[in-house]
Length: 162
Image (tube, rainbow, N blue to C red):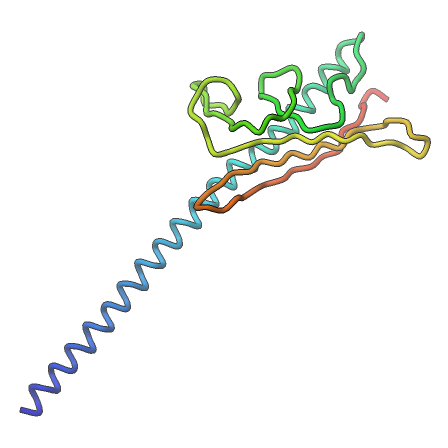
């Protein structure tokens, strides 16, 4: 009789240990999937932030290549948004980027993404107050699982013809 009850206790302990193990593994898998999703979104946001800097750099370079324009035309202080194929920036209006049919992110037609890109431009001056460059800070933000995440990129741009 003692032998049978001991086997019942062993069975109950074994079931408890297996249940705890399975719950631990499932919690770990859920956590890893969550982390992987955030990492994936962070990578996309990083590329979008760098693209924002490239948009401003492209406008500056186009200005420099046109003899009739100043290098900083259209690159005024403030908050802006722009597309990869835009030749100018527009005022920031807190809109979501869309995944367009050509596979690029923009503000045209396409599937809405959770990403918002804000381009902040601020002038850099020398000791005499003369504008010598611009500081570009691009912030890409998105919400996931009830939390707001963001990625920032910054670069100073100057007139490379001087």
